[in-house]
Length: 337
Length: 283
Image (cartoon, rainbow over all chains, first blue to last red; front, side):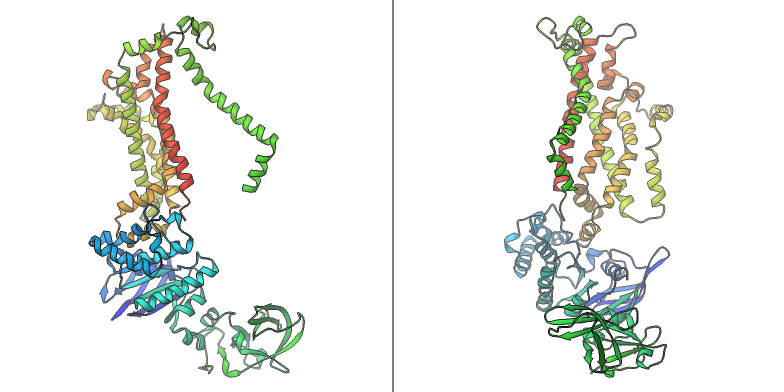
């Protein structure tokens, strides 16, 4: 059974089209991440799926039922918000139990489900506290707990980690991944952070300007991006784009090479001077001026002593590069094996 | 900013100047109240001979208070004023907040126009429509009832309430309201349980702004509800002010007593103001 199916979904606010003709399925138990720059419509799409916004046209199907005109509470979904959105006047227990109380579940069932979710998220000792007395990470766990107790057909996450600091973000990311494994639930997760997308997703959907650019598993998108946008958006540091005429190709084409596929060599097709060195310990990133507006990023494994202004030559394997036309579409199918 | 504040606070000259200005302002604001209070406890002659002197054994007199309680039904007037003020504030806050929520939360055709229309009342004094209001009250048989006053004051207070509250409601987190919707709360529950507590400071501000003019109003009680059983305190006190003779003892005593309830209401609302400001840090 499919957990979510969107058919020809469009949404406009007045004259502005925010979502254009979205077709998409989420299989049961799948973790799907919507990724894209801010303003690309991914959060709007999530709100349309939740029923918080109405679609202008098209249908939303959740767990086999068309829910386009069904209110959010009856769609079988649960949502985790970026700003936690906990009810300030209720305790942790009250926050988690409210939706079940609204559904009219028996008291014993409610407390059993809360206890289970609290144990999962190690919130047992905080049940009597109010949101104001919790730290940011704890609040986000309560928000996740509030979603778990509903046992929904589909979980929706709206940038749940962006209010947390870096260390906590990684922990919570792992926690969400574990949660997905143990619940085997279908999840849709919106983020603008490509690391979150790559690490969490079974399937990534890349958005731009309200359109789906490409759908695929993280490695499919990384190894075989459909166009310049997807190629540049996934992977960090992001892909280098070099005009093909610098490499002896036709003027209208662009060559894309990932920083990790470039290497320093005695001779090579590209040459320039080192303008900046980023030493990360495990990696060293060289930013090289090669006579075009964008600097060329070379990612070297390990630690390298490299002075600024050194002249270097850079080489790469043709099979690991991508050829793009002037519009940024992939030309040849050159899967870099 | 906090750094600058504390630096300013440390400088003794600035501190003295700041406190000096505030103390002077307080004295100016409290002076008339003080004069009313001391003179209400003096004999008539003493009031005119030395208006600024404190009452002493010779000049002390409670004749004003006795007159107030003998003539006219002071307790009834007080009760009328309280009913009218509290009921008007209740309706202003209830309907004002509901309209503000609708304007802030829902996208519908004419939202902007409706907001402008509702705010227009801020610029037009309601007293211009007195004749029409009186005709309406006569037609509906509401003349000489407290309802006449409550309705008029509610209408008078709504524009500013809608204007202020809708600004504050826009600031309430969308995620919180949406979380309520996903959890199956009705729009009414979202409004009363989630949004209203968060805009409580703004509600208290609106209440304080509206309370004093309603309590002190003489115009509408005189025109719409001058009957003995619906007189408000302000109107009731007028019996002591005649064209030729004014019973100053009674007037000052009545005014002194009229200050008390409004002060109690003010303290209640300002408590809310402060509590709202300090507990607002939810996120």
